[in-house]
Each structure stands twice: as structure tokens, then as C-alpha cells.
Length: 117
Image (cartoon, rainbow, N blue to C red; front, side, top):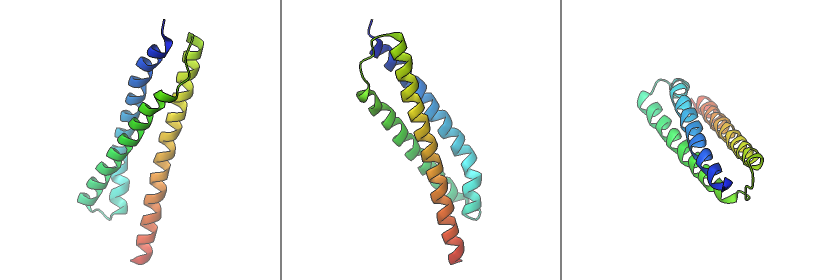
């Protein structure tokens, strides 16, 4: 039995689901936050929110797909579970870091804009 193939078959739908679900939640929740930052400029808010969502999807799904090439050979079920847990955990941490990075830069740019005005 080829445990690598089984791992890939499990990993890809799980990570795609997590990425898309989290991205959609951030997209929906972030619009209010961005609207406040851009002083109710709805068009700017919606455009930036869509750009952030697209960038988020591209970076995360690309990184998740590339991750498969760096897996060691999986020989049994225990290694398969360990590998999946390790890779999924790292990817979820990456998602969190990217989210907080975006929040930091948006707040930073907003403060800079408020000082200028």
C-alpha cells in the first residue's frame, strides 16, 4: 500500500477546505474593518478586500501544493498521521501569521494616513 498517495489524497482536500473557509471568513469579517480604515469608501474597501482574498488564496494554496514535494516517504499509518499533522499544523500557523501580518500593515498604514490628515 502506498501511504504517500493516501496522504496526498487526504491532505489536498483538507488544506484546500481550511484555506478557502478561513479566507472567506476573513473576507466577510474584514470588510467592516477595512471600511472603517478607509472612512466608508465602499469601492476602495471592496476592491482591497478582494485583492487581499485573492492574494491569500494564491499564496496559501500555492504553498500547500508545493509542500507536497518536500514530504519524506511515508511507510505506515503512524508516519502518515504524523506527517499530515505536522504539515497541516505548519500551514495553519502560516495562515495565522499572514493574517496578523496583514492586520499589522493595514493598521500601520492607517495610522500613517491619520497623522498626515
